[in-house]
Image (tube, rainbow, N blue to C red; front, top):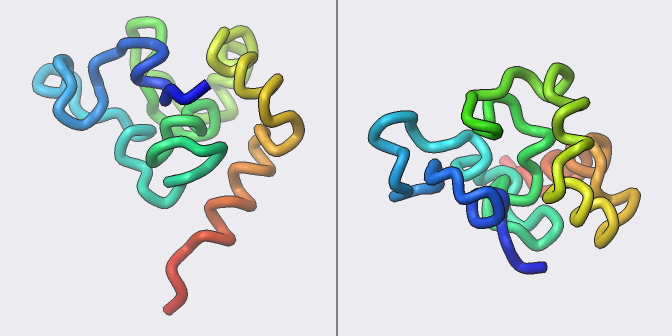
Length: 103
């Protein structure tokens, strides 16, 4: 799998996407701190762990509130199968923390 969430879901909220003018850039597409997580671009593979993403035709809430929906998502299931325990809220948090630029 080489896709990011916006490619898989075809939401149009990636940078320069067809829905950006109407809905704005998705937080997953602009989450540079997550660049490289599970081989994705920005937060393109961590959408389940990023607040305010766009899925199912609506802007989602916090990662806590979207957990049930994301666990049912085909994209989430593929990534979980491919990356195992690394693909979790803890793995995401650890990745972001360990990849912060040093001051």
